[in-house]
Image (cartoon, rainbow, N blue to C red; front, side, top):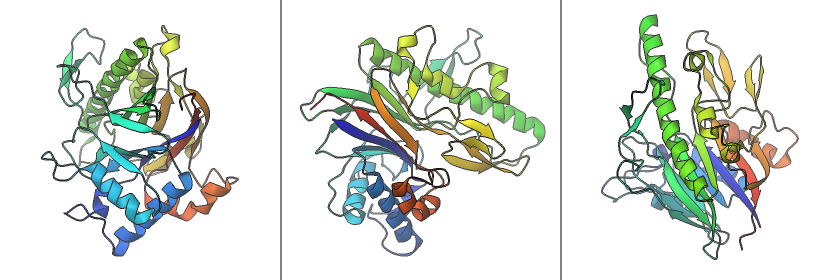
Length: 333
């Protein structure tokens, strides 16, 4: 069986719903919902991780999954996507997913042991000083299990939206350097926490996929060289356990005068003012998962792909990120 698995940072989807959790049906919100729906319809995913999804309230009166189901019923008529969410975040950009129940079952399967929960503070030594410091996931990573229709496990999935390295406050250069270092350490800590969970799965011979907006690319940038580590490499795993190393579903990005290619987003550099292409959205898969293909749905790059070009305008306008879609082959019924 071939499964189409994707991830999409849909950029503040909260704004597309009213206070009661119903889709807004007028103005720019309606247009953006239609654009996102056109993209998702073209992707036709069996499972789609959503970053920056609609709000989940702590009291459960409004959930990301319920809003996603209403949204898909409204804007993708004829589909029967189900929604799923996990621990609510402290902010307003939730992690959730939609899936096709005719192809797979999906369960929220978080670790609930004290000290290991993603919604609780945790300790990490991010600087190799043998001193563990306390950190907390601002958005608890979403732990899911994708099952076949016979309820056999296909893979674990962790959807993440980790700490941004962007600095948006007014600062002098000294403060800029200080905040840059702090934010990278927090990003490292979050990825170390996620990677520990991956190792726990792999030690049980369970497969795993990590996906989402990691806010980091491959290799070490100037700041990461100071710490001799980067967030994506942390997620990929330890070379001393090669069988546990995750693989990207995408080719290694190449650096050119515009930034990286392939790229899933772009940002304006605070110092130079230049627009830089970046690959910060990822799908990483364990080695026993048979990945057939993987593509960033970037209409500027995938000019020969008629499906991507058919939704080019929507891809350029619906979000500040492009989705990633891969295909995996599984023997599960």
